[in-house]
Image (tube, rainbow, N blue to C red; front, side, top):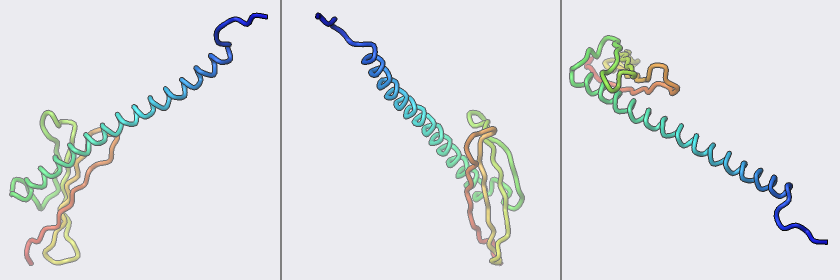
Length: 120
């Protein structure tokens, strides 16, 4: 009896299921890579913006004694900042905190803290 040349339906289905599993894993890795890239971009932006605000406070461009809040201009108009100043247990030392985040962002706000000596 002559057997026809070619693949059986079962062999094709097994090959397609293996291919599907490989593609799902590849797409999952790609999605995770995109998500990690977005988070890295966010962290880079907020770190630089927080440092910029802290340098402004240190150089006297802002009021270092009162809480403030605001946002940046284009292209960072989606980002907000807040500053707080707290007295510590040590006389003459104040804790300055700059918080930077993104409006409606999926990532946690970035906190930058500085302890400053203001004399006794």
